[in-house]
Image 1: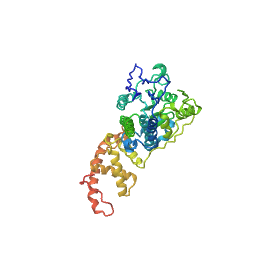
Image 2: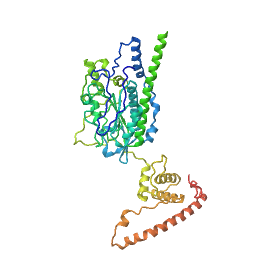
Image 3: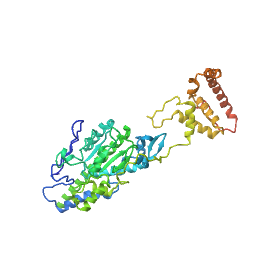
Image 4: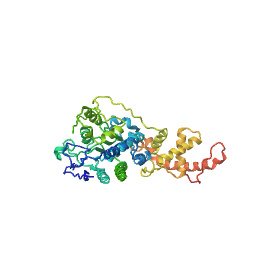
Length: 271
Length: 198
């Protein structure tokens, strides 16, 4: 592909700023889906391109993500365990099943629904070649999140979030920087138990977010919240595995579909 | 590309949609996720919720998770404290001491028609017969308090030898009860000591 963007894994250290992908082609201010071909494409190719993008949206579960997990898997990974009653956020009350001996228990039936919707959205964004940034400020799982991002060919940011990363990207990283198309939070809180700045910044920059919200988190600004435990290593491993499988499936599907249309085009040209 | 940084006004989707309606953002320049959001919207619109005022009454709408068996568990912990064996949470189907007590209690409740205190005692004896030794909690009150009252001090002095005697008596009593059971036709057949517990 002429305009294929080179992907690099974000290397974010304590002092270095994180690197954001630079769009090499256009100088237009944040032209996101621009492919900028050298010559005008043929009408059939255009129709095919549109078809590639619109067809998957007609199916409710195009990537068969429902088979990736069950409610029992979530229970075994201790996703239903929340924090103590005193830490509860009032906006998380609809997602709670109850309170057992002062510990909040999240309703796994709701979690399953929300997780399906969130994974489906992530898959479609990955299918369309969107950039996904995994964010987590939980130091225990920083390495896991970074290796998950590397495994899917996407990006991660698990260090201190410098203020203008999204909102001042064009000044800090130069004109024409391409910002992520989706932010996935494995924990929406930072190290001082306040909401991560990136949630508000993503909303400001009109970037949708998928976030695992625990019983002490604020789910209001997260586009696709997933009520679940964000502290147990078992739960985090499950989430990382699910997101990695989703993104890889979506990208493989895209390559498959493109190959299919290419072959179809060749066949038609021959005939 | 036109943008709107008002995160407290509407959702990400409505802002982009309105920019397109206003003609500021071209259809061709719409973000990648726009069509996906339109096809698969979230269950609840991600609108910004204002934080509540500081001096509002906090209502607790979340129900407590309590079971009928919790009463029995509470009694167990009151009498025996934590029990001899710690909880092993690494195993998925681990049966703790309190769980065994509970199951035995429920068996005996179905079998015989006794009062609550009698049932608790019977369960303790039954578990002892199965080989699970439960030590009654001596409690913080009896041992720690040092009074000049002679009756209290003698009680605490004699408590331990009395306890030990009681255990042996209980065991003998239990064995007698077990041996006499097959003769009584009214009661259900409680498995004898020789058969291993399942």
